[in-house]
Length: 280
Image 1 (tube, rainbow, N blue to C red):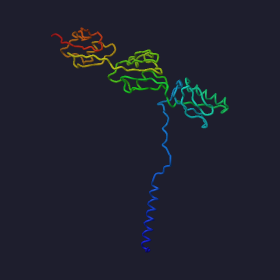
Image 2: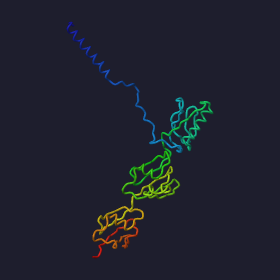
Image 3: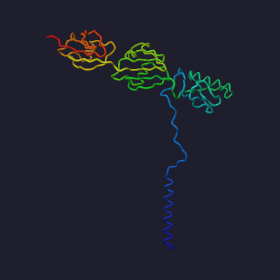
Image 4: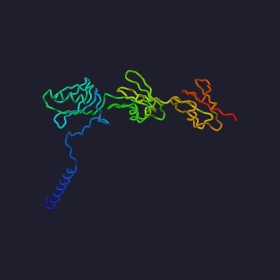
């Protein structure tokens, strides 16, 4: 091999080595077996109140104030206990966070692990105390009860009712008892008309029942019935009488029969109201 050919070959080898080193430097480093960080535990929208009662599958975080050598997250098991370092199983179900703190504190002191620990318990996942909201609401679903909620607050949590909803809610308790609440009175009534909900309650917003009005009204059509709706209110809902309409000539087709109505009569679901002409 001539000196010139040798130099050309040496330069080519050097170029390959330099290029390979640069590619290796630019390639992202990744350790074998490395995994993405695990997602964080379910976090509540807001802290639990001091009156929140723990139940099965709730998740709590237990720690000691000013110390990092004890604690962690634990789920309330089917038997109502949680498992913690040093002290093992501790009853947690049907306790508030304050009561659980005292239980853990007593166990740590009795076991001789800490002389005077300050135990902190925080609920980080809710699973045991819910209400179910169904029907003509904007966001039906399960709402966790991390504190005492009034019915109006639950309704706000689901975005209120739809335009097609009735003007009332039906609340069914776990014992089968049903109660009816007028939505307007949730805001304007007293505490009895806007009660606290209980875990296991089912809240249902029914679709509004309707009536049909036609004849000498400005806006004939199908409209929802409100509680206590009278013929006078139905005429207003239909945008009032035309110039030739008469409020003394209102009749309903009800259950296949014609019924003459006065302004104070109540409108019933499925009524077909006809407004006649007045005499000149």
